[in-house]
Amino acid sequence: MPASEGRGTSSSELNKPSPAIWKKRVAVARMEEIFSALAEDPGTETCAAMKDLVSKGSLYVKAGGSPEVRDAGLIGAAQLVEHSEIAAYRTTKTMAKRLGESRAVELLQRTFDEESAADEKLTSIAEVKSMRWRLPHKTTLLSFWP
Ligand SMILES: [Fe+2]
Image (cartoon, rainbow, N blue to C red; front, side, top):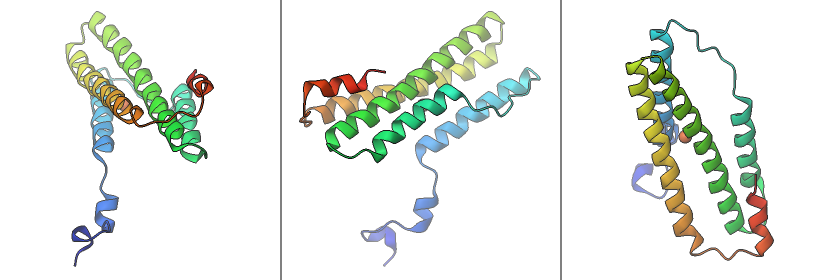
């Protein structure tokens, strides 16, 4: 019996990029198109702020304690990433609009919409999950303050 019919996951399924990875690849391709059209080099610099946000999220992956608090932390960390991306795409789109780069505006709007949808999905997950959370103490709320 193939693994896909049983309880396990086949190695080919595990190697498939997730829909989120595909969306990210499409977003990167859009940015490459924009840089190419502007005859600019995108470079390879890693965004330090994004790196910091991702590392904060990974702290929740490794954290012990209440699974509810860990889930809330992961969702919050993921939303911080989305909000940063939303701000970056909004700002870049505004600049492209001012420069009359209509194709760039169109491409940036698509990615902006996807990032906004991801943020809304995370909010929905948090709202549904939080109905079942038993937060251990009110001070837990303070741990989410950036
Ligand atoms: Fe995102």
